[in-house]
Amino acid sequence: MAVIPVAIAGRPYEVRVAPGLLTRVAEECGERLRKVRVPIITDANVHAAWGGKVEASLSAAGKQAVWRILPPGEQTKGWQELAATVDWLLAEEVDRGDHILALGGGVIGDLTGFAAAILKRGCKFIQLPTTLLAQVDSSVGGKTAINTAAGKNLVGAFHQPSLVLADPEALDTLPRREVAAGYAEVVKYGLLGDAGFFAWCEAHGAELLTGDPAAREFAIARSVEAKARIVAEDEHETTGVRALLNLGHTFGHALEAQTGFSDRLLHGEGVALGMVLAARYSVRRGLMEASDATRIAAHFAQAGMPHEVSALGLNCDGGTLVAHMLHDKKMDAGTLPFLLMRGIGQAFLAKDVVLDDVAAFLDEELSG
Ligand code: NAD
Ligand code: GLY
Image (cartoon, rainbow, N blue to C red; front, side, top):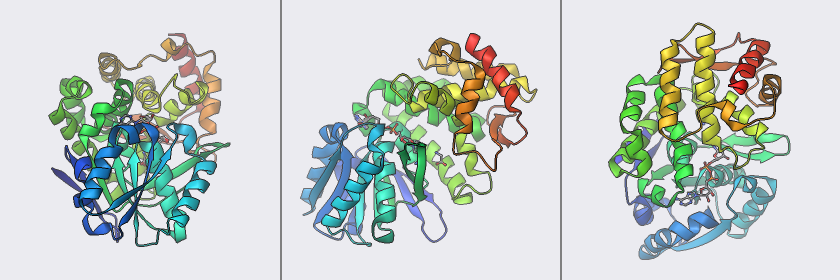
């Protein structure tokens, strides 16, 4: 088992990565589960696939799983389900020292974490991430949020979990497209600061995508190590270090917005395309070798993931995509910082990007 410490001052915790963790949730959580009744928030897909195993582990330890099973999908991450979930937790008499379990992908983790942050001014929670995206990114680092009419993730809190149990076997039931979308976030760690890991992805990414357990465990642990280092250095994204985790997200967010945050383009697919665009824009600015940008696009192509914006068939121009970017929460005092690259593994935050130039670049990308 890989055990990765997340060294947040005053609130350190562990991310454990190993096959079979979901079948031994009770023993991994140990004394954190103080009461017989254990509140678990999940969605219907995850409950169908993994609820029985988690429940069996708790029963064997003399605990009773008490489920809140939400509809799958991004729309669950809103005011309505948040309010209903908090009311449910209050009815369950969850106290500040109790732990709530979040079993699911980023939607369930973000919603449960935010509910835990505001319930009785903050109670504890444990992340049991079941998507690759959640295992390598959203379950670690304490960002919790819901979406509102004004946009995604605009209301939330920094609230760290007490423990994260990432079981690569959970991915065995995850649809292939969702695995690939999460893989974009794995590749992100290579591109932002670890050229050796990107080279590993080029050599072994296909094994991960087709289900090789060793490749999955290695990639999850290596990604979590990177995220843990960054989060420990800049928990609240104030120094610019944590902002590196948003590589590809500004371009990707614009593409997601233009496709209506729908199944047409999953978040991770938008991030993959966003990283290709960030690389190509870095080449345009004379920062990065064209061959590096070609390598990145070729890797996503090989992984069967979207890698050309022109292939999306978007009926818009570059200015429209830039307008979407301006609605993103990553705006800072009226300027839009961009994550660019000086090479593979060398991302940095550029604050001097001219939006008209980005729009012109996107016009070229959209026309192929
Ligand atoms: P998700 O939670 O919607 O899960 C994707 C789909 O897979 C859902 O239909 C779900 O029911 C299903 N599923 C999950 N695990 C499964 C399993 N093991 N077997 C079968 N089906 C399974 O999506 P996601 O990609 O995990 O998360 C996306 C969310 O994460 C977004 O809301 C995004 O804003 C958020 N996010 C948060 C952070 C953060 O730092 N907090 C970082 C990145 C993304
Ligand atoms: N996914 C971005 C962050 O955790 O900061």
